[in-house]
Image: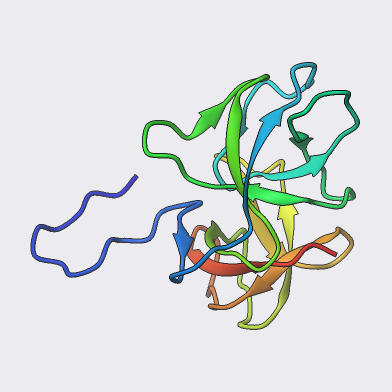
Length: 151
């Protein structure tokens, strides 16, 4: 997390933070209690999985799997384990995600779940679309707004 300057008028963007006034498609979901992933992080794309529970079950989405949404930043933590309930941004929501390389404004982006240091996005090539870049990134490690629109 980045520190805030006491004299600034808006917060500095942070990974997984929602943007724009109305993110209507936010859902509470449970991370698969039987997941093989050790932990999921803010900004991680998740997929729906089968299960006989009243809660929506999700697990980490690989690049070749259709994402359902992206884990939203929480106030108290940014890493989550099996069985925890988290909020995700679904289609139409806009959140900040970290670039793995240069990305053009308007480009379709995909998940890079194996990125060192946490989940990132890149211009869509062979993976499944997670959304559309609203901002542009000139290189890796930049936070840009992405409208979530899995395909």
